Length: 195
Image 1: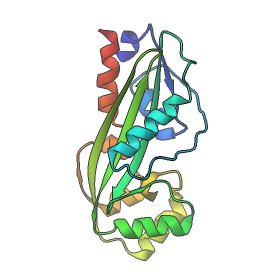
Image 2 (image 1 turned 180 degrees about the vertical axis):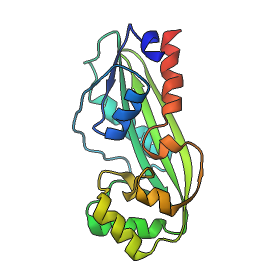
Image 3 (image 1 turned 45 degrees about the vertical axis):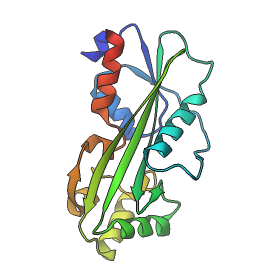
Image 4 (image 1 turned 135 degrees about the vertical axis):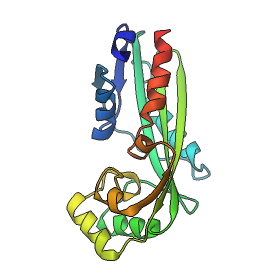
């Protein structure tokens, strides 16, 4: 449906995330993947969605001056916000273990920002979801890390994996957002191009 509406546009997804790529594919959209390596560094005074907004725009800035008239670039960033700090992707096993231990039996926020950039316009949307965990034992954390190796995921977990099935007690808000993209909001915004 959206594919037909956007037939005059070219969608570019600047993300190596297989989950984000799958979401766009599930919307039945034609899109191209273009990746640019950037250093994901943000000012230390930023909090919550200010961080993800900043990083999503930073990723889009790498394409400045390269977009054609009919191209829509999508960049995105996700963090876990817990106890007044951002948890990104873990550095190693020990870091991932510590993150999951800190999330155990507590509630945290998963925040994603999506930046849509055209040749002459930029729009950023964000989504926040509350996720609560049951108490996680050390053996459960070790089992998850050894079998699923979630080193490419903010907060060291994927809600769509084993840890999400056994560890998440409650979720308030968008489920796809916790997987890395509030696809409903992406759909709604892309639909505005068809008007």
